[in-house]
Length: 254
Image (cartoon, rainbow, N blue to C red; front, side, top):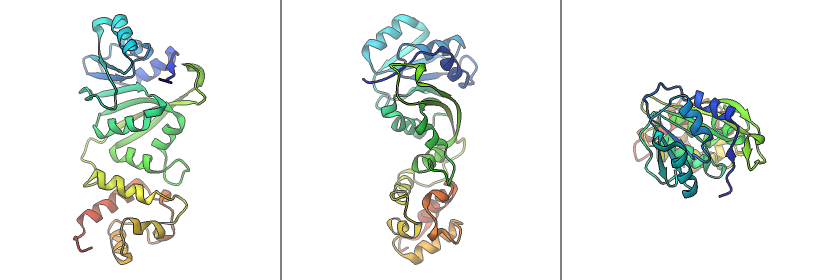
């Protein structure tokens, strides 16, 4: 399936250490592969451990290797019902890393320990004003906080990929999400970030047509007065959360 498998046990142990749970608390792993991370999790006595594996041959290998110490769910992690667990951990295939992470965030998994392509990791954790900051950064921070840890060289995998990877952790918000409607918020951010080089004065009509309404709602949301001359990547996630709330509370005639 074009996937590279982690072979470095020290990287696997670094991931397992970030789970930060005592034994007896459920954990699920995405993409068991040849069991390098599975072994590290079991060495730390984490679990009960459920492993999701799409490849039927690897699922059989994991069952033979680890027996009753794990539960193997065979199927696609983008489609299977997610196990109830306090932590999800995985070396995520590059081709589906972003939609898979978004699914985990949307499911409000309390803690997600991930190993992904470094470019994706930087976008998840990016701060306003950086070249990596954008829609993915804002949506990740809608659901919680992201912290990045060690980089992982291509030599830690087989077959050797052409990119560097990065370990990171996403911790879900304990409180309610700061927007009234996630689908409406995601669509709003998509429209505002659809042309990064444009200023917000040219992008805002894609969200709020009337300039007077846009002025009123951005003022309600606490946006800086010079927002029309700014580009979308200069505003923090909280500004977009506040605008979504202002739009949702505006009368239909607005």
